[in-house]
Length: 467
Ligand SMILES: [Fe+2]
Image 1 (cartoon, rainbow, N blue to C red):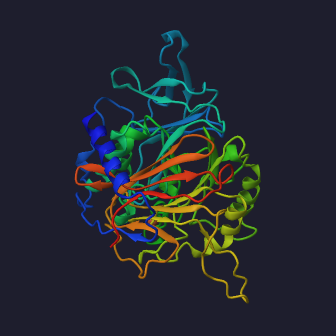
Image 2: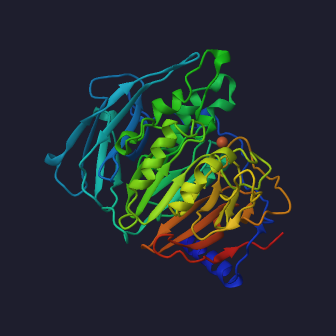
Image 3: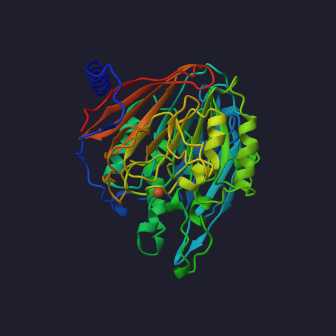
């Protein structure tokens, strides 16, 4: 409680000292409280008990929010190890239901995975807390989750936003800062999970330790996954030529429910939000599967039912950091006109290990001959947020381009996470929480106005002093 109070007080102080807009801020904050040094494998031993289920994580299992995919790993494929039992928390034992998982294992260079189980539960009641139990006998483990309310325009819902997390001491701080705030109901994850590929031969044990690391959150609320470059694991020099092999084996998503043909791009509805996940590292030009899917997908969004249209993609389109500068440019050129036409509210990206928020801008006038190649303010354009600041092994991205481009509203080379608190069809409170020593401190916040119901200009609520 004291901690929450401190957070609220920090927010009030920031609000009171900065009532006006801080467009174009480069934050001077540079402290990094914890090093982006990986926690050793021994930090995350498997749970006790014979064949105990581990690396438990859940994600939405259908398009509407009445399904959940439950995923876990067991060392052996014993009788009963591939079943999940589940029941509404206040119901009696006789109402327990059970679902069977699909079970598989994969090899990668000299590594063979445990048995990866994925069970999809469907037909859940909306807005209801469930228990679920995995494993057998004394090794069984119990978890819980709460389903979202039925989709509707004024259904409040709070998403956490995390990217490029990895498994360092800084990642640990980011994850526990997010978890220490009870508001977050589901996580929007913008790619780059374990960073196993930064180790010799893409040490797959790091995928296991990552699964154990995020379990305290990911077993209890859905993480909506997008894939980043660290999920590609394409390594022909060691005979591994199937891109995204570990990721696709370990993290299942409900892509078929949105008529997608690949788990790398898909959509879900959750409460008042429509979430579209894209893949920076799959073909997206005209005539490709991702392009065709997105074109028809955008037509399906009913803003009267889900006013908040949010896109997750790994490589940012508007990024003024020196790191990964312009890597997202070809996808921006391809898709940006659609995003403006469809009035996407926010695009969350990762990849760059720092934080940045854009103004509402578009750059869609250029047609080779007219020379109109500068971003311009556009009330129909999304806000682009780069939040690859989870704190992974590769460290902070702290080399900005100068002068700060006019499209860049706030940028800071720190680690942290964000919350998007959707209140109703017109307003959502967005806050970015930097890891400042042992506390998450709100360093950037904004009342986001919905592009369909209230396409007015927003004013920044708080921000650090200008550099
Ligand atoms: Fe990345």
